[in-house]
Image (cartoon, rainbow, N blue to C red; front, side):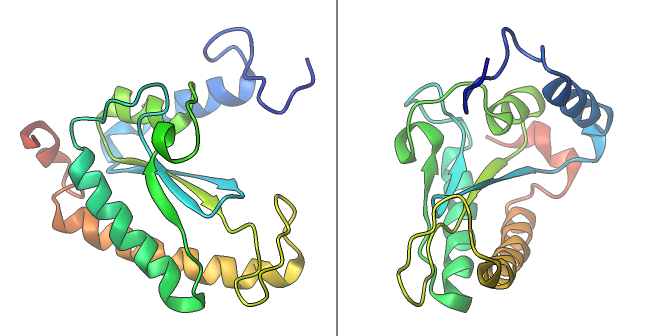
Length: 166
């Protein structure tokens, strides 16, 4: 099969997803949140992708996401939208963020990196030119610091807090 979105005939049937899932499960006691990186839509996505119904910790995840996208904007003026996969981009099943949140009950986010030059408005889509690597990396690094700070503030950086969240 040769399609962009082919995920295999069944869950974890492909070596890449099976290996990643096994690794994540092997370090589960040391994980406080999960982040995946994709290109390119200027979005920060959170569970769920398969339903419009929000996850139980949706309001806290949205607090983290809002602070994170504000940090993305601060350095280069790159505007990111944020919200659940289902409502922000399109209904989708099988995302690693959904699986990690469902399996480990920790916040899970997916960055869809910048797809255009913030200064010129030039749209480059999935293949960013080399001059976009540094600004993308700078704004994402800034936002990761804020994401960790906000997650810490909300109690997600302490594994003992997982059972007490509402």
